[in-house]
Length: 192
Image 1 (cartoon, rainbow, N blue to C red):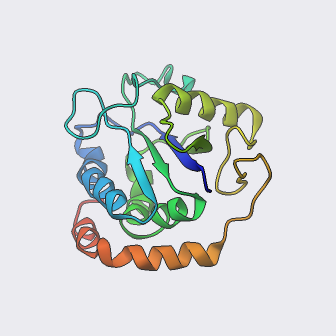
Image 2: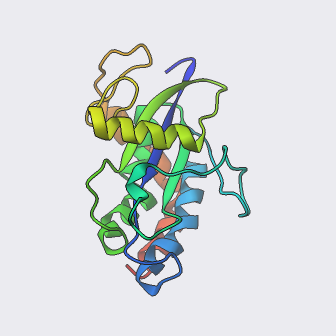
């Protein structure tokens, strides 16, 4: 949407520690997913993680309340910006990322909270980790609203409900595919 970017925050809990062999499939795919996003149409940027190479962290990394009682002090989560719903959906449900989603049940615990939350930010603004955690909690507590929504019930920056253009999503995914065929070939050879 002109003048706005779409923020996405996702959060989950692994079935074991990040370095565990049970989570190896996720760990090996993570850099492939980051590179596929970098190559994807509509990708604006992502937060990095403090103390790790890559982009700078967008504030202190915090988690929603769902980490409490899990015994984990860190959890898989990401925070990024996209040009719009269709570009994010094309990346999320096609190519390298879609391949990872097929195997996510092997690495992640079943969760009683939403896996992701979407919201609009003014172009040029950058969300913080705390924003994502707060909005995910808001979505879990209140359902989709213009403040915190999902692909199933999206909103425009003006707060009105919107329908995602599925044909546009398919076209964007088709344009993305040549730029990630090499990454997808590697992903398909990895442990699930």
